[in-house]
Length: 222
Image (cartoon, rainbow, N blue to C red; front, side):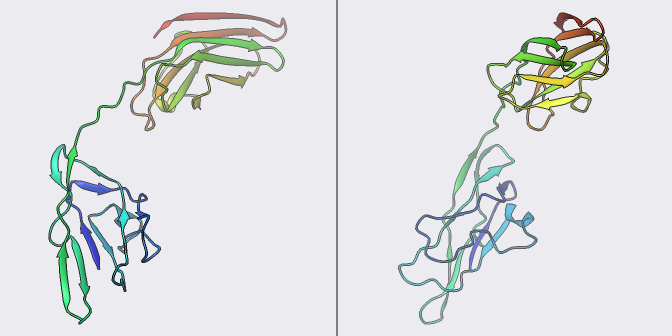
């Protein structure tokens, strides 16, 4: 039995378990705990190895993260270690050496706004293309907002966006229904959608399908 008991401030990545390159025993790197896969994050991580012989190797690696900044012990010792029966059926308990981790608070880079949002009307088919210049550091995705007047945007929450666009794309097109004015704003967002950039400039397009004419306007940053 191999057991790793993690400290309460240490969490394992549930799907990061990998057998070592020189492994000679077993084919499944995941801990034999329940319920799976929830228990794979710890704290109790057991592996039941039925037989391992002299000069054989078994090893597994996995990623961890901590929830408390500072230098901390990773394991609880004992019981983290190996329990086995030797050649004369005597039980031996060997503790793992303690491993420490330096947990640091990582400040994510700021989510930068896009620049130079423009719109272009396409008469056939009746559609508009919204384009922008990406920020120096690409976000996880962009959120596009639409209104029928320059000040008609009622919310810039993620749920109010009409489309999500992922880098490296720097444009988006939509078909229009009839004529009229459309105005667009683009924001950058992180993966979770809880950190957003400032809004871009507002770019608008006015269309008249019958006259096949178009006008485009760009207003300041909101």
